[in-house]
Length: 108
Image (cartoon, rainbow, N blue to C red; front, side, top):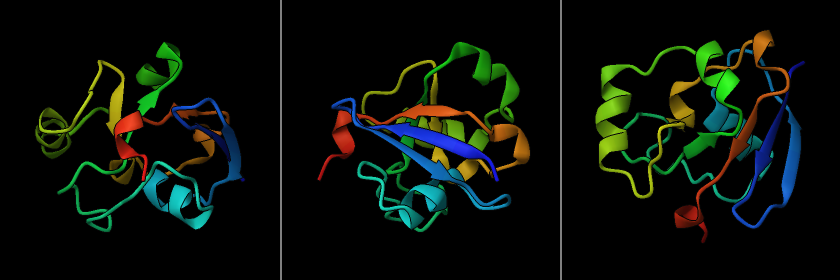
């Protein structure tokens, strides 16, 4: 089972066991990780599962950004070159060790 690290905007880390086939967004919700809201339920229509890929090397290892994700990111607050939507990333065994930072804009 791959382990994924979510880092809240304040630096608090959450190391979680991820289920292969689930999205990063659902993984965060299943483990009550603050900062991932998933308001649209994973339909790529709200941007509230926005996260940052912490290590640039991982950007090359993840699936490329699809057009619908790119369009949604354009309307999301505080995007960076390493921004992704967690609903669009399905967990694989190769995600073991992935570290994601969460934006301040998604704090409740």
